[in-house]
Length: 213
Length: 213
Image (cartoon, rainbow over all chains, first blue to last red):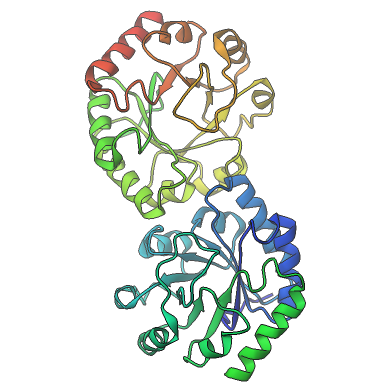
């Protein structure tokens, strides 16, 4: 099915938090059925390349009959190997121009921005969307920088030249404030991944996003 | 310059042991001048993609006027990004068939084998050489399996269907015994990387290899 780039509710899968490959596939299926609009497989440095590949392949298959794209974090080779819909890179990953050369024009490229300086130096012509964060303190990303808060986020949203998704510590209690900054969508890890009721967690977030928009 | 696949003395660069990018480039230049026949940039899981890319680019440049190929361990995307001469993968990395698809026919593919069972299941038609090891206990590879010893190595050398390089704890004191198994060459990390006199360390190894052959 033709994929759509819709950042409304972007689920980042953490292999450890989501219960490995089967947990990630299961979470993905329920989440997508209930309103998640994009999926990313997050980098876990200790994970072997073979396991990365198997996980990406399983997720690609789980999303095959949907319009929901699969993004691979950092590992461009894995994205190419499974023909993922896009790659998401951070400031310390392979440079955006090199990544774009490797993935070609047909895959989407996401790029992480953590502050004003990084936003000002974003290669807008190379990227399809940006991720801004962390908005709030987060426990799922070990190397995250200081939390931006919604006031700072509002300023960055005004300056961005591509669609953007906010990430970092966003849950059903603060999602309304985040959406009201004008951002295109939110990305979550632990607000869905590892929750007891994936369906309920997803529905709760998507409803609050719709109300706030 | 046209590259040659010669496994006689294969230097594996460890970013930490070799003193970062400048240390690796310096070591490479001296080692190549004194007889090293192949270079590999080894995976360091904590290293960021950007740093990997910069290191690979610097090594590619350092080898540009030589016939010595540059192999990238594990990271196929980095190998593609710098147009390295080959990729070396282990049993836990991206599968050999997928790796071959990504790198095409023009890059060499090396594959690690640690025991008879792995040798028996090696996809010979996909790989250009194998690395067999560890031969002796090694301190530079954290996830290394049990040491094979030269007797076991001799059996594996008899069964191999491609050129092979022995790796793991090989130094000037045991290199003669290793070469006498009939192996095509040896790979070293700490016997060159981090040595006070890189030239002397390289010359000593290459002379012993020549004498033993």
